[in-house]
Length: 351
Image (cartoon, rainbow, N blue to C red):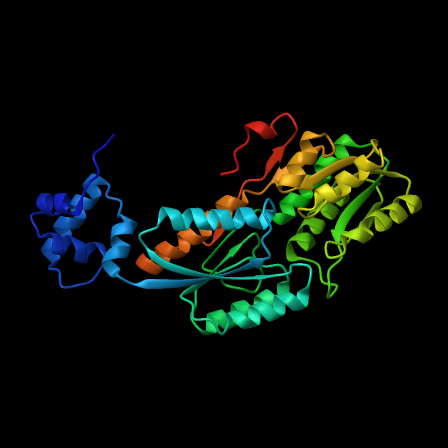
């Protein structure tokens, strides 16, 4: 293993003091042109990577980062996002970061509005946003911009905003892919059902809108004749789902395949299994604990992963390094989409 280059090693090679090297690394001024050139030449020769932990300690500054996402439940999608965020905090444990977490009910637009309003009253050096509703997110982003507070999106990019960066899968491509998969494994002329959550405020999630557009465009491009039905279900009142689904299938008996545009694929998978309906193919998204269980039990045919833990990790890492170094940041960061089956899920590591 290559020996780690220390600041005092650079100083010795450049013929300057360690203090001079530190000032060059952090662009603090009071360095002659000759000394700066000598240090920069050595940095290039040794391919020096600054130690963010030491730099953070030397700055002796406390950073406050606000994190706002949908409510976190163990084993669910947003739990993975937050695990990634915590993983970054653990990696940069010597940096003095205080996190304020403000979650909202992603199935209730009014909960989102109330939470976003609270955020504007919190002191923050930066914000991580897990958006659901487009207009509410645009309003929050505008307020943060006016206060010169940098923000990063996870899970979704919202148009008409200017985040420092975003980490997300391409949801349009995801919907396009889900349509390609379901039409490949079901009977050619069968109807297709799309399971969508009923939300208070009657406003679809931004990710759902984008996936539905990709899904519809695939059907149009391939000139496929399949009729598409919306299948409603409730997260807030799950006791109603059996009735909702039973009514739907009584009225629509030509369904050959179903796609679920959010992480609740296990809802329809469990219903089909409980009612011994084996003729319907199922494509879902997100590696939640319940979805993985349904995949292993062959109640889901394909499960798409979006790397949420890596999204959370990169969002926090990006903010920490930006707050310390103010280096340029790559804005667009799309995560790969992973297609998992019963045969491959046990060999898959999301992060």
